[in-house]
Length: 157
Ligand code: IDP
Image (tube, rainbow, N blue to C red; front, side, top):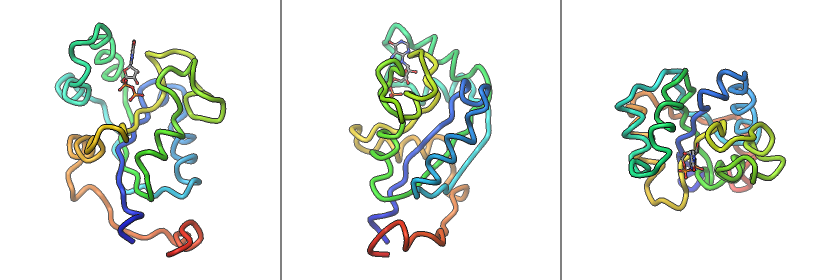
């Protein structure tokens, strides 16, 4: 099932946890047919935040971003499935919730760019998914299993 095993890193950000949206985010990805293979409820420290958002370190909003992402617990997750990275990005919607389409997670739950509910690896940044998974998870924290509905999600299973 090699073409269904793409993995992507997803995080319910501190605003999602505080607002009780963690379950909703999991439900949406789960119901889509994506498979949860790793999850960690945790508080991100300064060092991990700076590593995760390293590409933004020269941006004016960097300090604010690090402060926000370390401000409360997050649910860090790894999801697996066909085209998982791009599909999760589509479900998240545009970075600024004000521009995110209704029906997307940000479009349904957010109004503010700085508090936009969810992170998912950028599918246009080659290897970002694997880099982010490695930053947050050890390989033995990821679980290899089949979901019983896979033949009903993927036609060729
Ligand atoms: P993404 O989360 O959709 O991949 P990125 O451009 O990688 O978007 O930005 C990372 C995060 O930084 C965004 O999710 C958002 O929370 C925050 N961010 C991006 N641009 C701004 C800004 O102009 N002001 C404040 N926060 C921003």
